[in-house]
Length: 115
Image (cartoon, rainbow, N blue to C red; front, side):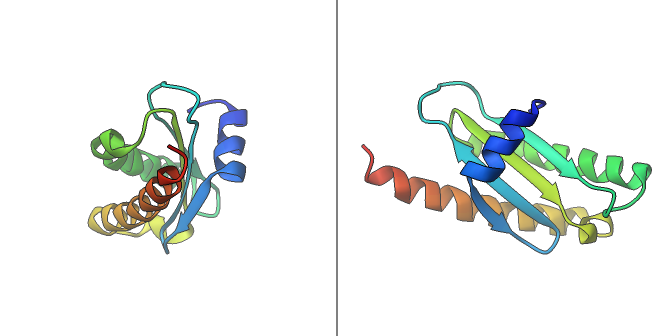
């Protein structure tokens, strides 16, 4: 995901699940059959440029394996919190899984009534 409008739409209109190291926002556009788009937000509060880029690379790597779990048309924003800078990859992966599971479960339960 690269466009600001997509980030804003996912954050403002989507569901949110927070963990100590990250916050995940998910919005599923039901009117489209496009592949899921993922964007990352790592602010200066996380650290300097080197630290921020390292956190982004780690999150991108973790999301690569989790993309098939996302519904078509999804917009997903992963925002790193400052503790992500010092967190081990295993902790980031576990917290990402918990947040994604929570959001996908909510999404599935809300879609049951719309079919």
